[in-house]
Length: 101
Image (cartoon, rainbow, N blue to C red; front, side, top):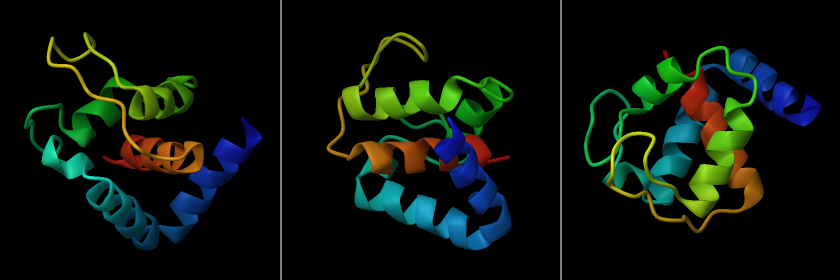
């Protein structure tokens, strides 16, 4: 858990650079085909995801796993497919989403 805390702390310090890196990775990995930062597309808006899991200490790990393995049911019955991302990329994406306001 400490490495994730370090990643989030670095994100707070890095500010816009972290936001750009997260958005760049989400775009590169084709996440933005189904998600947007501030509006629902096929999947929920990333800001809605951040709001839902605000304060949940297990959220980063859970979201990283969902990013890698996919899932269905939390946001409706349209499934999110598994994504071709490394564990580190999944954790970076989860931390970026959870940092959105």
